[in-house]
Length: 237
Image 1 (cartoon, rainbow, N blue to C red):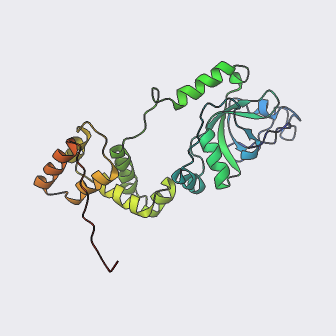
Image 2: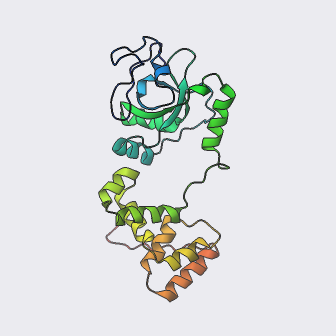
Image 3: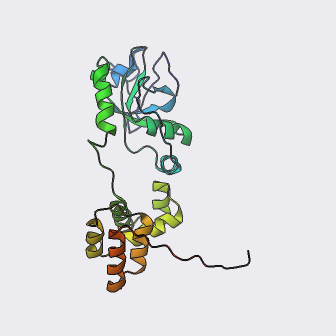
């Protein structure tokens, strides 16, 4: 990411240039950031400056995140404001911005909050509210598989799911099998009091329809046991 002194032209989500009032060809020479305040804009990655006080020490750019952004773009807008030196300052969305840069995207969607420009304390509070576990909750693995299964049932192919999520074909196949578990089995799994892994759910899916085996597996999982398949030798060492 690069800082800059002269804000470049930004575009709205419909790819129409954002200009100041007074005519489509009259954009302020040094105030295009103000012209976009309060709007959702598509802004060049190179024109966004990472917040110098970002407290996140590790952006943790997972292969899944980068692959997803490369395939689908950034789907959740960054929160930005105007920078004292001119241009755009990122408040929230540093991981998405870094993933977009690594994936080679030219632009990302941004929500502009001009009111935060002179409120540094508010900028840090926005970071906290957006990233703290106390204010957000990620899906459990069980919920992730349900969402993937619902997308598949709604018409998304395995290829589309793989590209959109950055998961491998094997992971998608396993997740869809787990997502198709009966509601009763899913409810019992959710009530075990521990987070199940995708592998745990895959084993449950393998024995779907066998009530005795399912009951035994759920009991083992409840007590912290995990089932591992014995390795089979398919050839010489």
